[in-house]
Image (cartoon, rainbow, N blue to C red):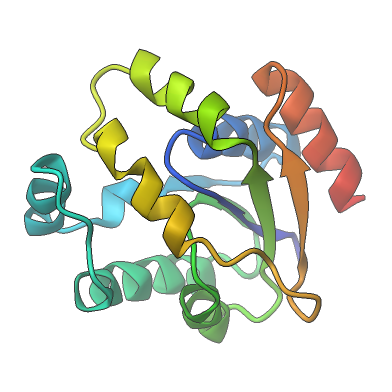
Length: 163
């Protein structure tokens, strides 16, 4: 059995970049959680309105199904997974999932968001993401890795932390 990894963190922390690179290095499929959002949720976020738990339920269930379908071959998903209950929902389909929390100071991540083009998540919602963030707890399978540095350096730290 291969690894199932969820690269988590606030918007702009580098989940997609690091997740894609990690999946490539592990030779497993990659999924971007944003691709699982229904159009109504993307519209809501694009207008500057944060999603609520009701909005997130079908999205999390779709990601959980993807994880469950990849338990044999492994896979990497870039998903915010900000709250413990969201991670629990994802683990329900794939208990062996490991979470990698990409962590960094709000100022650094805000600067990255300001430079990002073509993404539906406005920088104004970053504060709400930090407020919602519940770091990994001791009983959760996972590691926390700093986002400081180039994406390749972050990915290498992730690989080292995962063993």
